[in-house]
Image 1: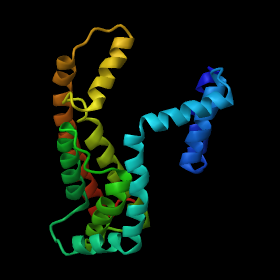
Image 2: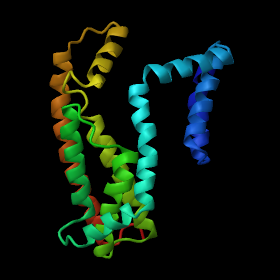
Image 3: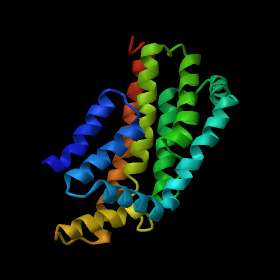
Length: 221
């Protein structure tokens, strides 16, 4: 059980709102040491993982300063102002369209965005701009709107990754089954993943309609 200490450290760190990167790094080091590796070995494995997967990590690292520069020059304010001019836009409609678009492109292995690259600088400001235009934005509803924005990214991406074999998640799922000795084919995984993705899209439509109704009634006050 001591090898699971990293999970406890992550829970404690996030609970106290400490720096997420520092918390995850310390949890990884603690887990490695608890598993019997020396501190030097854990650091070496961390460095090797970063180098081996630099194609995935570097775009994220390089994206952050770009997004920061755009925000410094008023990206969020301009997007919010644009949404205030579109009378038909609601928070729920914006999030549902984004979830559907994110899910559709994820099926093809196309990464439209992420929390740092799309949701925070673009999608959430669009939703907040629409809510402000309708008189639905206050301190309490702002947090609810941002939470649903994060969910639209997670749900739209997560449930659409297992339909096309070109996406690495499908192979990852199969490798987990193979490691446990459970016979399963890629075709079977795709067969069950497709209706799940469609169902999640319907659930999202229902949830965002409920969100719009809640905001219209002043939900969160």
